[in-house]
Amino acid sequence: MSRYLMAFDAGTTSSRCILFDRAGKIRSVAQQEFTQYYPYPGWVEHDAGEIWDTQYFVAKEAMRKAGASAEEIAAIGITNQRETAVVWDRKTGVPVCRAIVWQCRRTAQEADELRRMDYAGMIRDKTGLIVDAYFSATKLKWILDHTPGARERARRGELLFGTIDTWLIWKLTGGRVHVTDYTNASRTMLFNIHDLTWDQEILDLLDIPRVMLPEVKPSSCIYGASDPALFGRPIPVAGAAGDQQAALFGQACFHEGDVKNTYGTGCFLLMNTGEKAVRSENGLLTTIACSCGGRVSYALEGSVYVAGAAIQWLRDEMHLIDTAAESEEIANQAEDTKGCYVVPAFTGLGAPYWDQYARGTIVGLTRGCGRAEIVRATLESIAYQAADVIRAMEKDAGHPLTALKADGGASRNNLLMQFQADLSGAPVIRPECVESTAFGAASLAALAVGWYDSTDDIANQWKAERLFEPVLPEEERKEKLRGWKMAVSRARGWAQQP
Image (cartoon, rainbow, N blue to C red):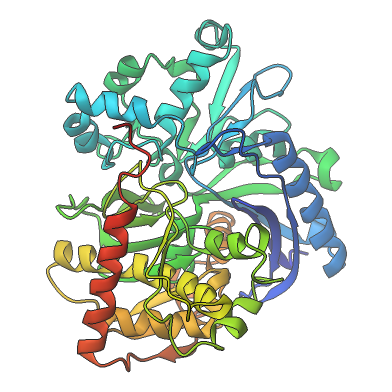
């Protein structure tokens, strides 16, 4: 009876559900945006209840569009915005406050204090992460510090913590399953990626009760079944991975040295390093890539906070475009940016700078810069940020990039993909299915329930749609990168107290 795999794609700005058939083809898509809250400069919040409501709505809508019944769904796989912290009441299921989003910078001072107290080395050795407000740990500490009675309630086992995957699985299973997978746990800054356990030393340091943390399981695993009341019958919930690790899996980057970049709200480059956790010396993170088939693999990651979000900024705040798709058309009206650079450091800079106090800047403006130039410079900023990560990755790997697999919404932009190839000096490959994140989650679930026998089944379904070869002369490329470095230097440290 099973005809489809269902992927929950819980992004930063919207909830989506995609139904895939056995051949990996998309049969139905539904999407709904949810509210972004910015209560103070640098703060970003979500309503976890709204995330669940929209995710459930799009799941039902995707089934309606495909004419699919619950009996025809083999399994549900979940992929999610990572690092976002949710705390809720175990009995009522009501969050104690809004979720603190991965982009939020309110805990920058807490991260500074951990570094000042010389804990950065210990935390990095255990978690593979650079101490930063980006990760869940300081967000969870903030919630416990600033919500009256929260820490005491957490110690009594009355409150639960989770990233968005945990929250959705808990809601899907009617509150019966409190679990996360290795990839999401590895992004909390609380998880020892070598021992594969919550680290008690870090928990004690931040005064976080262990009892509120979810059980950690492989990414391809039957966690439980959906509440029968949701879809009419139980459906196995059988896969979960943070969005970037899911994309790495969906791009069939199963071999050591394979690299992908997802152009979503942020921009995330991952390189598969096999079963070895490689420590970066160039500002990258060591993270868990995936866990299935009884083994755990690792990756190097470079995280860019603002990519597609910069295009949304052009649309929603600057009103320079009406739709995200229009950005390419407008940008092509300018031959170049006339020396203008946009650094979209709205919530700081991620890899390889890790500057919590950087802020967005536009530099190099002249009277010749108009709408098209600003739009083009904003698009190019996405490629520049990715190029910075690629250079760091090449240094850590000890060899140049041979190819970059691209996915995510902004990868549909041909101008951006060509500019990325030009800056990187390596081909950029766009697959037929740019929904690699959702496909990765669905594939993890498929393996768990036996729909696929091995990763070979996934690799055989991956097909390239277009190859972008670098054409920019080397001197021109170097000149553009020099200008970018100058622009970044103007943005850094802007919000730091004098």
